[in-house]
Amino acid sequence: MTLNRGQAFALLNEYVQDPSLIRHCLSVEVALRAYANQLGEDVEKWGIVGLLHDFDYQRWPDPPHHPLQGSQILRAKNYPEDVIYAILSHADYLPDYPRVHRLDKALYACDEITGLITATALMRPTGISDLTASSVRKKMKKKEFARNINREDIERGAADFGVALDDHIQFVIEAMKSIAHELQLTGNGSTENASFATDLGTIDTVR
Image 1: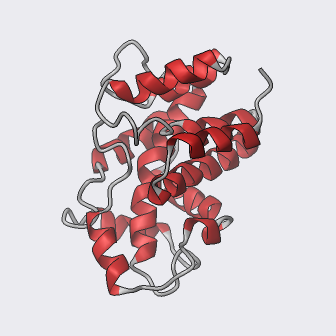
Image 2: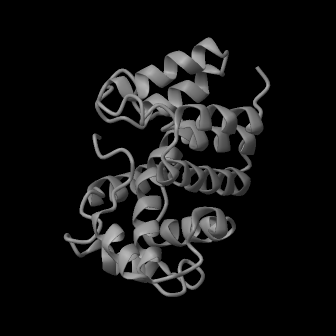
Image 3: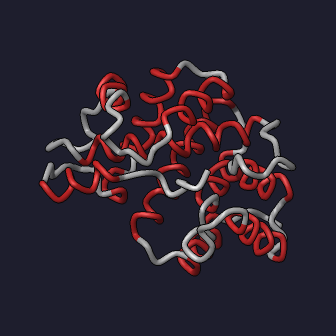
């Protein structure tokens, strides 16, 4: 099939009603598109992998149903096998899908870190606009902050993708800034946001 972002976004909205999950998928999408552009890869393919990597999570949150249920839906819709494989590979509990391709590794590297960036930005009156990697790293050291986000996954993902962690964090921040309004990260710094950020994990807490 010819990959089409509009169709992929419609599929996401068909299966997901949770706005925070949609924003997570958008975050990973924009990060993967930025990396694909930098690396000379297929920007549309990488973006759609990011957009759809968790589209089945709200209906089937438990492993291994997520992402296996989603893979069946994508296969029935004739999505390319490398797209499906990359999405399957972001689940550590599926040993039949090791991360061997650059796209697989990019998805894993971008997935968890977007959650920590989001949580950090929500704490700031200025949101993501002036957020830096050093601020995210400081929050990363505090175990009680965004406690559901796996720090080891973040470090392992960057290392496996072959990028320095600080550079990776800043790169993803810059990508997410480009859609800050869609991600609702333009800045409030409210008590409600602070409470949400403390508990925030990425969608895939089952990994």
